[in-house]
Amino acid sequence: MRTPTPTSPHIRGRWRQLGSAAAATAALLVAGFGTAAHASAAPATAAATHKVSAKAIAAQVAKAHVQYEKAGCGAAPKAGFAACNALRVTGGTTAFMERQAALKGVTPKTVKPDAASDSPTGYGPSDIQSAYGLTDAAASNGSGETVAIVDAYDDPNAEEDLATYRSYYGLPDCTTGNGCFKKVSQTGSTTSLPSADSGWAGEESLDLDMVSATCPNCNILLVEAKSASDANLGTAVNEAVKLGAKFVSNSYGGSESSSDTSYDTSYYKHAGVAITASAGDEGYGAEYPAASRYVTAVGGTALKTSSNSRGWTESVWKTSSTEGTGSGCSAYDAKPTWQTDASCSKRMIADVSAVADPATGVSVYDSYGSDGTGWNTYGGTSASSPLIASVYALAGTPGSSDYPAEYPYAAAGTSALNDVTSGNNGTCSTSYFCTAKSGYDGPTGWGTPEGLDAFTG
Image 1 (cartoon, rainbow, N blue to C red):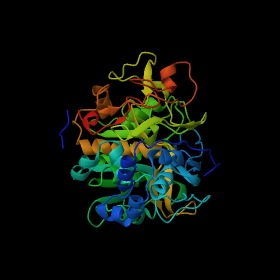
Image 2 (image 1 turned 30 degrees about the vertical axis):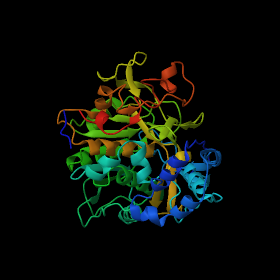
Image 3 (image 1 turned 60 degrees about the horizontal axis):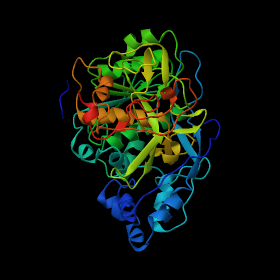
Image 4 (image 1 turned 180 degrees about the vertical axis):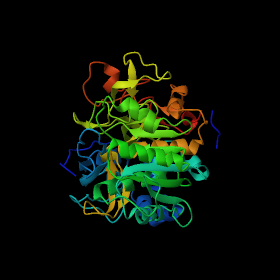
């Protein structure tokens, strides 16, 4: 129980419908402008005077398409190492940009190749909170909880970039000075940090911004491993738990190996701690540490606005046969007792999911390095893992003997989760391993959050 409280450019995204003019107008206020001040600072008057039909909005939004690339930390790793699961939009027009243009009755701008923007081009906090039923919880919960982000190498501008993101969206300050933010090495040092790396810096900015967007009142602990080796990243996880974090996000992964079961017990077996891991960005196939039975494996979706009562719809994120959310049946990790799908005798990936499609990506501020400094749009399961870790934090501290990966299974099939029933992430011999369906499936698990009930014991 728990107490309440860059390599090669990629291909086009797809997009969605917005079902009513009223919903479209409301969307302006939740389209990443996190406070009333920002909402009024946006061209709301243009939206109010420009009469636009739902059909016209849907037609313009459907034009959304992007090119993207793996972050500099996303190259295929050698054995014993991990890559990050972050994808940065480098060109085209995101769904967020198409929606804003339709609301204002103007021609949409584009993200210039390899260039960041001077204002957000992806989803912001209000979008994320709205999509997952978290608006009220984000306003009132999370105080005193610490979400840890584990990544490799140092981002020298992490705190400064975090401040820019939070200031833009009107979120509370989160600094070293006020005790909200802390950055340490894998040994806990605040002064002896790893060497800097611009690729991992983008990943770290994405992770920090997703915690901020989802749980604005949470404290954030950034633990930087000295390299992307499995051993160093695992040591950083242990340090995060040692320093008191009850929620730990890992936006990285690599190929499975026979060493994984020993890594499980050495690094990821922490009762009373909600540990999340990205399912991967290369389509169907299992990845570690998402395959660990001690973590919540997080898949990825395409998140689109809708005229339904929720205001959003989701499908499996897939851009091509080699680009999309990961999933699959582990070759090594034992199946946890709470996971009962019939065709995988070992650990099945994923458990739950959240937005990851770069075409429906999230807004990130990153100023370190040459790969797009300023406002960027990111996707990949590197976005969904910290988001889900932060949902756990909003729900409250896990029970001291619990492994919170099992919590969503207790809520399976209920309104606490948005069941994702369309799309696939590749080809597989067992349909649900790679294809969405009603109930449990590999790419999206039991679905996406609808409030907090599926993330509490």
